[in-house]
Length: 365
Image 1 (cartoon, rainbow, N blue to C red):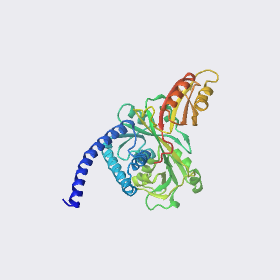
Image 2 (cartoon, helix red, strand yellow):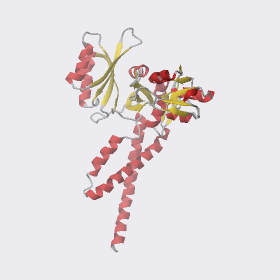
Image 3 (cartoon, rainbow, N blue to C red):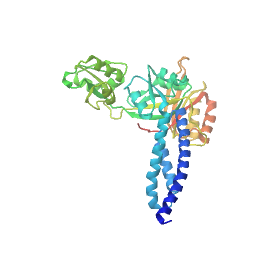
Image 4 (cartoon, rainbow, N blue to C red):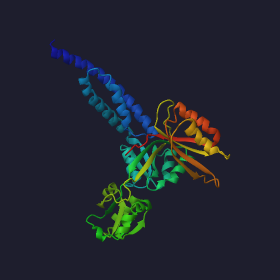
């Protein structure tokens, strides 16, 4: 047997071993897909992929071969993601609104392989996950221009679902109308009140009448259906494509920093004590009706355990007159030993204390 035949025989033997290992790897990928479906997690996890590359690259001793191993590893992970995507095509994601709304767009960017189901309001979308109609829900929790979404925050406090991810979507508002429309022909613009507010100066400068609509996508559908060149809508470019409209002018919102944070809600909590699940966490709690209870609870968080609080808001408990609960976001891992000790030591100052979920900050979509 010459060198070529010897090398080919060796490669065949190695390939046979790799085939068996490949099957084992894909079985593990299947378990990952099942976990992600259960917890409402997206397929793409950039941080995890980079950690795998960094960890496995050092196993290759030859620096020249290592250069080829990294793309080999990336290709293997791409195949794994494709397989997970196939398995997760049955994932049902709830959102509030209609096709083309920003919530619909957000759900599609987080879960591009999933079936998206629209519901008439936040509670209906949330309840669809509670009763098992959907696997998870993508709901807005805060807008950089208009503040928190109080109704969704209330669902966090009163409802049973967990947040396993928070994603930021940059909201770009566009003036859209029938193809061929000239801006000078427009007399009225339709959109959701928040979108109209975000573009108030632009609308005022053109002297148009602003008409409120239930959401941006329905406003676009309304303009398309009437077929009147004097009408326009304010919505996303994706919405314009969906309803056969044309973007007359893009980026008309006053603030270039207009971003909405969307949370993914699921029935299962993505929890593992001692394993970092996210670099931020959410709590909701009520303080005891005793002098200094709120200050004492926050002192445990900051002074005693050194967690950096980034958000603190109060909301009325609607069932009880003049009673309030608090929504809190802080940096750190709440499921670490330190985080669990924090919850234990905060509890005496709270009537109710609940971990809503964990997330990675600034996950852009």
